[in-house]
View (cartoon, rainbow, N blue to C red):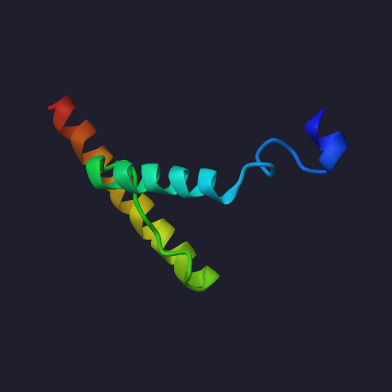
Length: 72
């Protein structure tokens, strides 16, 4: 087990390059697909929470409208 030897689990053992690649892939997805959004995590926790709720609320509202239109 990796954790027993180094004190780190599999995710903690990945280097910075791995996380940079993952970030790049998510940013690309956010540009191409509406279901992915980017939120600036450099803000305060309250600002991040507000941004998340705004994005989620907008997506839920849009999906509800689409579902309603399908029913008609």
